[in-house]
Length: 228
Image (cartoon, rainbow, N blue to C red; front, top):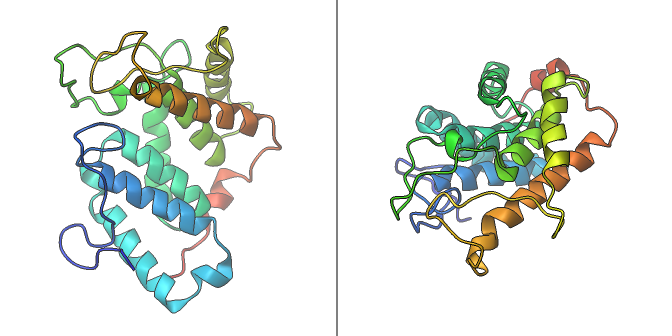
């Protein structure tokens, strides 16, 4: 009922805009739309087949495809994730292209850096973005690549999972990632834990997924059509 039906953002929903990446900036509308697709893909076929849902899903898919060229890689990762829950959401060629971009950006230590996924973003306090691999980017990407059907034995994936295993904090059990919006010290308060919380969640999800049976072959997963 709240989905936009007209204007340049038709197919999406209203979203928070506090000029904070990665969830509350002008491009975060796309992130919210990708989450909606992920949610719809988690429902039953009986729900998705309802005419009203199909109409909304068609608007959502149009928005995701129409505004895709302007999205940073971080948003494209979220779309790739959603496409695994909702087969046919985007063409297989788009999914393969995102996967190749991710492999190209993997660092020699096996991880990824969040700031590198949106290179045009600047911190408000003028400090330089962190450049080392972090738990948020590495955890999210490791999870999504597995769900996209990357073989468990792929050495690049094994390097990523190895990075996660090596970088769990010995004193609090979590994983860390720095803010994209300002430099925060050790006494950052609850706000400063947002990125660490997200990093820990995705690291746990990625490592848990790695301990489960291998997913279906990528080719079979990408070929299923989306009814709309």
